[in-house]
Image (cartoon, rainbow over the protein chains, first blue to last red):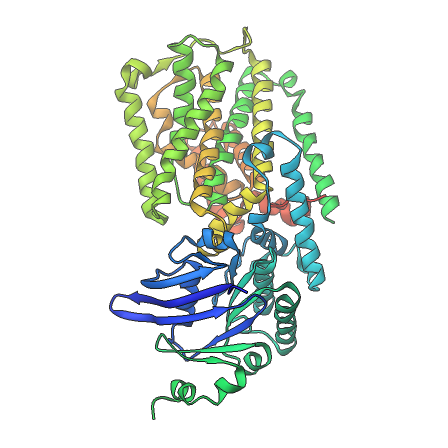
Length: 254
Length: 319
């Protein structure tokens, strides 16, 4: 089976600094890989490179065999890579359901003239998407929040809505940047269940950056460790935990 | 609840219906003010799409208005076309100006840099109306023939109904656009451009669409201006006109169509009440602006939205 995502020797340079230094990794459909490493190791920069938010200086990124490095973020999203943001990327003035619907943008077939002049397919497509968004919120137990403005939600609720917005179109690849930050333990458990189900049942590949090590151990099929922009370990969670290079990355060089 | 809200919004049809007998009750001056309000509805709606929905500080609105007015006026005075044929070209001229003024925003210009560039475009247009004397009559202005609708002169009652129809059509069309992925894309760009792109929204394309629609709607309002005033002069499209248009959406409610309508009604009709006391008009205008910004930062529309959910802005379409 071809890899869902394939990075070969990817580097991102800012000025003379290599924020990401010749990183290679691959992810299979339905696989959950955690990206860990100390602050400043280049985890978010690597996400940005994959999603088109940071320029790739050298190397290639292939998504389902297609080269995607340095394409525009909306092109990459349209191909089926969705991400969440470390600092939260909700649209505060829109309601929860409108946020999820914005996530379904590429799934809606309405056209400019169709909306203006007809009552037909364009409007039907909009209604279907709204029903789909509402069903998703209800299935996740937050149907009651649908009409609330996203800016007024608690931090944990905002994270959950942002993840649902990324998940709504069922993208083949999901990039989650510190999804568990600020989540209370029950919400953390719900998040773990959701991510596992997306991977196992829907075959969605998940790459997540996470500092909560117990969540990583419990969720990830594979752990990739970055240090100073370079990959220092890649393997099963237990093996990586015992790796000397990883300890060095976290504790400093002996 | 959502179904009820949708059904509730059909009640908005009562507003234009209730306005139908208005021409019977008004004297010619009051009639003029009513037409003025109806003209400012699309002016505000178009402006609000850029400022309120896209969230971009672009102030070329008065240019779209002037370009629409001159397009209609020149087609009437120089090409001898009846007014009603000039309405669509006026909208398209405004639309073209909208696309042109979207270019700085596309190049990543934002905030007060964008404000200054777009203001400059408005002033450049005013200079062009003065310099293109052969077409526009220069600073002396352009006297227009009587506005015609299918061969009939547009008398007071007819003008009111035509303006009402145009305002209603533009409100509904804009509402259809806003309650769709287009409206949500605009609001996503306003909220967080990087996140919008991460959702597969081509932000540049939707910025152009927003400006184009804004320019079209305001351009049609320009044709209404030509029919209502009958004389075009470059000074009608100056900075103080822009300030009035901005005040309309600030007082009514930024990002709200209901706000555009309320603001147009209040700020166009209110000054007429103070006409008999010279100087009090500006005072009332300033006071109203300060009070609204202090106590209702989201405008008069937010007052209604707090009172009943059918007045809340929605960016989705449901069964």
